[in-house]
Every structure is written in structure tokens, then in C-alpha cells.
Amino acid sequence: MQVIRDNDPSPASIEGCAATIGVYDGVHLGHQAVIRTTQERAAALGVPMAVVTFDRHPATILRPENAPLLLTTLEQKLELLELAGVDCTFVVHFDEARSKEAAEDFVTEVLVGRLGARSIVVGEDFHFGHQRRGNVAMLRDMGAIHGFTVEGLDLLPSPTGATEPVSSTAIRRSLAGGDVAAAASMLGRSYELRGTVVQGDQRGRLLGFPTANVPVPTAMAIPADAVYAGWYIRPDGSRHAAAINLGRRPTFYEHADTSLLEAHLIDFSGDLYGEPARVEFVQLLRSEMRFDGVEALVAQLELDVAHAREVLGIS
Image (cartoon, rainbow, N blue to C red; front, top):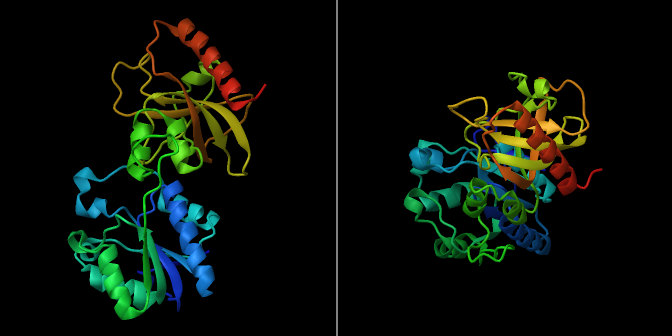
């Protein structure tokens, strides 16, 4: 997949494409449906298919106090777009100046000037540009002038049967409630967090359940404090069944400022310090609890690991 960044010293352009535009945080099933339709339009026209997205969530500039937590880093988003078969991703540097740009100027500069768009596919509720004045109707008006067609798609119904359609907001809400299975059903894959393993207080090792401590950027959406079954992926691609604890460890700490992500790799022994880690959440096992002592905690950890084995289908 070709990646073009509009703030590169010598940015590239392409001549003719079918394009879709959006934040694409999570690259969830709704996004994937838009991508597939855009790919169909590209194939019919005999041109590449492009995604226009942003190097940060626009809300971090427009309303930083209320900016949503992210489902994917830019690196993850680009990986997922490539897996979806996107030919080119045009990454727009979003800053204060861009936030004040008129929607019409964005169309002429990026969609027409840099990409030569011949077909544009977006969600029917899509808005862009200064004060969100750009929408599907405006795109169609400009398409009549610049020679591109515009298609607005309805939002994808939730696979969970919920009345709310698939969206990044709905996925964040599921994660906040610990419902990682519902989040996965909307993402089309298990929710994943990434970080580099650091040394902790080694309390898990003393209890007989060593864990990989994975700090997560504060900008990322983190599931509710709880114990989960999931998978730990090492840099070599190997996948390890894991019992994952997200929380503030109330048995040992009366007050903790932040939640900690700890993954116990089942049937694994080895040094993980300094390794990049990917942690996938499959199913909630239980809420976080405070135990009266170490023996009660260890007994519960044994049950958690057994439950994780059952959920993940390992003996």
C-alpha cells in the first residue's frame, strides 16, 4: 500500500482514483463496508482505491478537552487499511490551520488537486471542513463541477442486534463496560492494545503467576478494569494464550492513580522485558476484586487461568 503524507517535503500525488474520507479510527466493520464499495467503484473505473484520513483525531485540535480515546494508533490504522486491500492512503496532517480550512478548499486541494478523485464514497452522515459545513450534498455539488461522483452509504446495523449502528463511539462504549466481545463483533476482530514490556514490582512472579507489564498510551481506549481471556502476540508473530488483568490491584494498593495492563502468558516461561507486545482481548472473565489475603488471591488466579484456557480452547 502506498502511503502519502501531505506534509512530506516532496509529497506525491496520484492521477485518478476512487476515494473515501474519514478518521477511520478502529477500521471497524462499517469502515470496511465503505472500503469495499469504494474498491468496487475503483475497479469499475480502472483506477486505484484511496483512503483519505488524518494523522490524529481532529477532535484533539477542535475540542481537546472532549477528544475521544483512540481505538487504533496511526500505525495500527495503516496496517489495517493495508490488510483491507487499500491501494493508497493519503494521510492529512491535521493542525489548527487545517481545522479552519473551508470544506470547499479541502476538496479542491486534496481530493481534486492531489488525488484526481473520480468517485467518492462516504457515510451518509459524513461532515468535514471548518464548522463541519462539508457534507454529502456539498460534495455532490462540487463533483458536478470537478467531474467526480459521490455516494453516501447508510451506517451498518450492529451485529449485536443493538439499535445503535456500528461506530467507533459504540465500540468505545462497549470497551468502557468491559464487553470486549461486543466490541470485537463490531470491529471484525478482537480489540488490541500495544506497548513495550517493562519491569514491574514482580509480585506476580512471587505468587507463581508472572506477568508481562505493558504500559499503554493514555490516548488509547482501555477496557474496563477486569480480568480477561485473550492472546499475547510477540514480535516474531507467535501467539500465546493469556489471562489478562486490567486494574489497580486493590489487594495490594489502596489507591492507585492509573490502571495497569498485566498479561500472564499461560504455559510460557522466558524473558519479555523490552519487547513490543500486542494484547488481544477475547472475553471478560470477572470484574476486578479485592481479596483478604494472598492465599485467596492465588486461588482465584488459578480459577482465572483455568477459565481462560476454556474460553481460548487450549488444554
